[in-house]
Length: 367
Image (cartoon, rainbow, N blue to C red):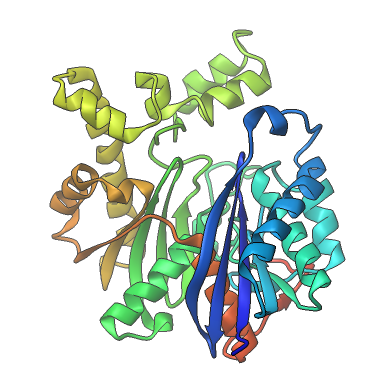
């Protein structure tokens, strides 16, 4: 029997993760999933991320040829990429959105190819394409936008896709409507996002590019005066310093590895420096989660730990011990972003959620 399926596409630096889901109303079931690996030397030959589009599209088409069979592709969902601030939800991909992420993104990142890939494959099958909860989802409350410097208001840049998916999962587990849920979700991966999710909205977050705790590869929030001095010291160019803060910072800059499993092995071998750095990262994380709980008046249905580091019993054990008096701590390890993309798309196809059309802007008023 022929079935309807949704294709999810999640591009990384040297990978493109593809997944097919059968669709029954607004629920999805996994059919096939693969991480398509791309050789680093091949990727280095492309002049830009946008120039990779044809290459990756060929690999996605090959994935479909092996798994689609007689099924009907009814929609494609791509990772949202580095858009301008948008409200949470599902955005229909059109040519204007494709042009934006390819040529004028806020930041250059492989995830910008999600929408163009979804759009191209969808057109080939006469189906719509969508992006779901991109990192630029910005629903900060006005009071959360005020900083102490007029020229630099606070803004949101957050792992919205996985955070909102985890919020929906917690709501289901608690048998509570998502729009009544009050939780703090900590996405712990290469970068961290710690967000207050109240009434279905991401009302505040620790910007993962700026004020988060330090992470396996990011420096996190730093004292501003020494950082300003370093900017003018001549030691680094702008690009070199950005690389030190985002990619070569955090645990990597302190211990020479981004792999927390390796750090844990170093701790087991008696490395006191590794133990101190590991604890400092989690100390800052627990402190940030506690601070974010204050946004919800410490009235939480639960705290969620998610992302790759949530697979570590040492990580989750430390945080549970620190945080369990605030609220029950739930662990949803990993980050099933392909499923979250398909779930958002299925809600639109079933009519339980309305899709937005690009261009769309978040309300970022501060007063």
